[in-house]
Structures are given as C-alpha cells and as structure tokens.
Image (tube, rainbow, N blue to C red; front, top):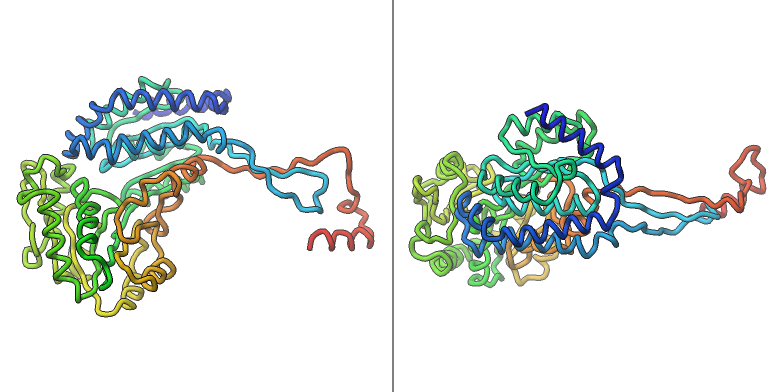
Length: 458
C-alpha cells in the first residue's frame, strides 16, 4: 500500500514539474473527456448510488451526477478566464511598474471524499483541482464501495495515473496518505476525522480545505408560511435519508406555531413519501448497520411525535419527528446525520441569539420568516457557513457562490470561482520597468527625497 502510494506521488510530482498541466487547453481537454465519460456512465452511477445508499435514479441525477456535470461545465467555460493574470493598480511610489496577481496550481493535491454523496463530493472538487492545473490523488470512501469502485473505473479510463489517480481502501489507506507530503489537502467529512487531517497536515505545513458539518439549525418564526416551510423542510431534511451535511439538523420554532408545524410536516411526509416511507423505493437507506444503530439510539420513544420505527434488514429508518426535546437530550449532543428531526421552541425571538451563540458554528442555517427585521438580525448576528431564507440546502447548488463552513464546520470554500481559487495559490507580482530608475529609495537619503516619498506614500 505505502510503496504504491509513494510511486503514485513520485510520478505525479514528476508530471507536474514537466509543466504539462499548466496549459489551459490541456486542462479543458481533460475536463471535456471527464464530462463525456460521466455522461456515458450515468446509468451505472445511478445503479451504484442505489446499491450504496438506496437513492432513486431521479435523486442520483439531481443531487449527484447532474451537479457534478454542472461544475465540470462551468470549469470548461471559465478555466481560461480564471487562470488569467489579474492586473491591479500600482502605487505611485513604485513607478514605473505593473502589478498583477497570477493564479498558479499548488502542485500535487489530495482529495478525500465522503460516503454520503460519494460521487458528487469526489468529482466536484476533482473538476476544480484539474481546472486549476494540479495533479490529483483522489481517495473515495470505503463506506460506499460500489460508487468508489465506479469512480476508480471512470478516472482510470479518462486520466493517466501520473495525472489523476484513485486510491481505495479504509483507515489504513487514509492513514498512509495523510503521512505523505502533498502540496494541498481537500477533505470532506466529519469533524472528528477533520481534526486528524488537520493534525497531519500541520506536520508538513500543508494548506487545507476542510468541509465538515455540525448541527445546522432551522428557525421558524411566527410569521412563517407554515405549509410551505414544512414542504421545504421535509425535502431538505429527509433527502438521502437525512444523510446530508447541510440538512436541517433540528428545528427551533416559536412556541405558538409548534403544533401547526408538526401537523404540516406530517402531512408533507405523507405527500412526499407515502403512508409507509420505509417501503417507498424512492426513499433512501442508511449507509450501513453501524450508522443505522447510531441514529436509532438517538430516538427517544417518549418524545416521538410520529415515525420512530425502522427496518434493520433494509437499513431504513422512517422519517421521525421528536417534540418536547431539550438541549440535554441525546439527539442534541451530536450531528444526527439521519432521518430524525427534533423540535425545540422559544418564547421570544431574541432568545435564539443567546442560545445559538454558545453552540459550535454550523455549516448551514435556515430561517423561515416573513419578518424583515428577523431576517436581517439572523444574517448579521449569527455565524454559520451559509444557508437559506425560506428554503433549505439549495444554497450549495450554484456555481456562483462559494460553499463552505466556518469555525467548527470547516475552513475554506469551493464551487465555481471559489473552487478554482481553493486549489490555486494567488501570486502577487510587481514587474518593474528598466527604462527609468528613481533614486529616492537608495542610500544616502536626501531631504528632498524624503519629502517626495512622504507625498507618494500618503
């Protein structure tokens, strides 16, 4: 294992030093090949995602394959513009010269992707890294073996291993990779593993982007459109059987709308998933028995409003809503990452700022409200990675905005331009002209030069 990784790294570093990846035409050509190959494999990708996570064909394309193709398409269209020098103004004191910023690739980068969106969260950053001119070692999750095997097949078909290589395996492979010196590491996953990634990266002072998670709150105030809020919360929470890093982790609602909201959520669950969701072929499953058991233990039967049951054989847990939940309950002590939705209440909207200020900063926050003051206050006073007003999770579905966390939920962002820049170092360069050399900065200094400098530097 280690010897193989060493050989991959050695070959990729040689390939990068050759300058082959610096050509924008080369990058675009590679992205086009990736795009066409993914289109050819669309049905196989859907089959693999169904095998790993029980995803329907529609959900697989909407949330994984389609979004990956969108990111690749963006990079094909914009790699040239994003790679270009960006001229900036030059202070008069540096006359005559030209100043510019030049994006350059880091070199050989490591991308470690998770199991919950195993195709999207591998291919999306891969497209960004290729567009920026890097060579890539891609490590998909061992928890999603069917999709990981297909990713390896696709990548080996499109790219030579000295350019992009896939390393499979479990913890031993992860540990071996993290011991190596990469030029940049991009990790998506849990906070626990993220800390290990950062600890190992610190040994080599390697720049990192960490896309983590956390308990993302969904606030519903007394002005919200309850019916529409319930519809959009059910979509965002129970997509992929709740295994979405930006899913609403819990609801914090005005006590006066609690029962109306619970009733509306129950109605929407029936409308979207049927009377018996765990038998709906379009409803996903937990990734494995370990996570099934973990999530099942978070459900307190005494606090279940509806749902609360599952099928261990199919790894499906019914969409579950819990009420009368407190901050001390087990379900509030960790990121749920499953189809369980606790509901807490507040009496005064101002309470939420003190309550949430003491919590770890979440990856996402959602607010359902028609109150402009509440909307402004949440945006100004609470710290979180990103989010939506009157919707859930859709903020990550655009290439025009960076997606990432803050504090405990991650560092750095990607998607579109932000993704290109995540895998680039932006060099700042001053190009001084030689046809004139002003003497004022050289010794011995003169009073006249000092006065001139004073004016220039103001």
